[in-house]
Amino acid sequence: MLKSSDMKMIFYDEVDSTMEVAIRKIQDGFESPFMIVAKQQTEGRGRGVNIWFSSHGGIYLTMVIPLEDEITNEIIAMIHYSSALAVASSLNDLFSIDVRIKWPNDIVKSKKKIGGVLIEYITGAKNFLLIGIGINANIIVNDLPIELQKNTISLLSILGFEIELNKLIDKLKLELIEFSILTLNKKFDFIIEKFNKKCIYTQKEIIMKDSQQFTCMGINKYGQLSLENKNEERYLKIEESNLIKAVKN
Image (tube, rainbow, N blue to C red; front, side, top):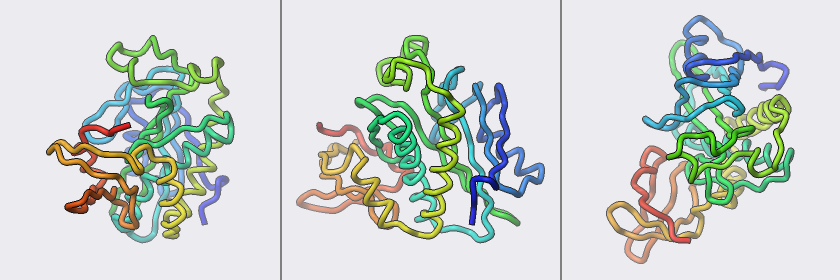
């Protein structure tokens, strides 16, 4: 079973992307668990084609978990959710900050984004699960690009003081390992219950880009977002999150 002491920590001042560094390490023959941590990214990645602005003062990391066997699409979906829960748990335990999760895995506070999760799964002679985390920690929001300021928040702006980054990194490592083990062992009921309590979409009215409206019932055991109205049920995969236009408060 994966332990915190098994996780090799590799620190950088600046990288293009912790995810890309992790992939290169795998290509170079790294086969043990490791985590890439950087103070800054020049080409930080979000989901899809999104860019994660990664200035100095944030936390940017990628945890790599080697796997002997291939994992299912349901487990991969659940890893998105459990990793977001690991971030939420870390922030609550260390700073008593009750963050929420915007499906599938954006971490939000007061409807503004404070962090996010990026998952990649690499198959081959050996399989690797990559969990990328970005958190606006000691970030001055007014120093961000103007187009990001309205919808962004940081730990600094919430708490009013800078946090000790390494303390949060250590906590994230522990929580990510714990939640990953639960997910790989298919403890889906536990993850679903916790995620649906944290998700800002649960029991809200969802407006789709095709103008149809549904009530969000939360995620299901297949890792899909379950939507219902009086006429039909609809189930969205993570890659279909862009089909949602708005959420009624």
